[in-house]
Amino acid sequence: MTASFWAPGRVNLIGDHTDYSGGLVLPVAIHLGIGLTVEPADGIRLVSVRERVELAADGAGEPRGWGRYAAAVAQELAALGRPPVGLEGEVDADLPQGAGLGSSGALEVVVALALCAVAEFELASLDLAVACQRAERRAVGVPSGILDQAASLLGREGCALLLDCGTLEHRWVELPDELAIVIVDSGERHSHEGSGYAERRAELEAGDPRRVRHVTTENERVRAAAEALEGDDLDALGSLFAASHASLRDDYEVSTPALDRVVEAAIEAGAMGARMTGGGFGGSVVALARREHAEAVLRGTLERAGAQGWIVRAAAGATRRRTGSRPGRA
Image 1 (cartoon, helix red, strand yellow):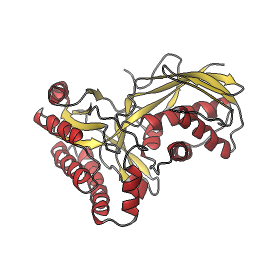
Image 2 (spheres, helix red, strand yellow):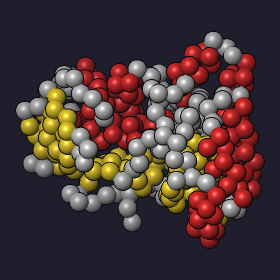
Image 3 (spheres, one colour):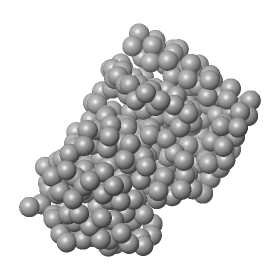
Image 4 (cartoon, one colour):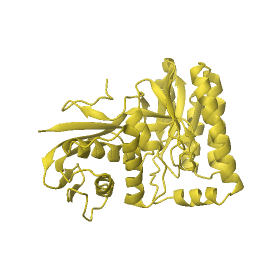
């Protein structure tokens, strides 16, 4: 029996470096994602364009690259009681790796869905998100939060997800029809394990005043952004984005000159607001534009800075798909 699964990436509208302290985030699952087509097998054998992974059915093995995430997911699910049923299949993706759009989280989620399906093992969405979060920590040793995995699993078309990462309480915030989300990749590669991510968390937990100030004020901005979206107050979003980026740059020190240039370029190109998104130290910028101006904002930004970009749609969360289809696509 062949089955196919898909998990979206995400862009975090606002609320960065708040998830691992139990704060608020406001991500959107996007139409770019990772697919996996599988059938049951003795062990776990996965292939992509660049890599081949072979593991025992419980995830045992010594993989490299993205295989570390697959192995860690299998091991976390085994610890929860998943029967050791293997699979073999092929990974396909249009979600860029290293752009700060949740590619590792989407990979963990799509592998988890497939492993659960072939073993007829059921977990609630949030329980699966927590297992995938633990898998990320196991795979790369970085104390990351639950933002990426929750956004990929709980996404809803046309909506952002307002998530309290401490309680896991959540609700969906409908996005105004006239609002377009523009993502611009700075071209500067991003990876948690190769950055100062763990150091920033340690500084926050030690009570560094600037780190704490960022998290406190960022949580306030998340609440205000959700209220602005629900009230169609698009003008308020611009100032919230500007304050968020300044805080990430100055108080949390996770922005870079390349990201700062893209933010400036987006504003010059007519964006209502722009900020770095994700863990920082490279990756992407998220900008907001009125829908009729989105193409011009993207084009104008890329003329000034950045490597590539997209106008993204808020997509549904991870799911089983018809073979050859991709739920996030029009």
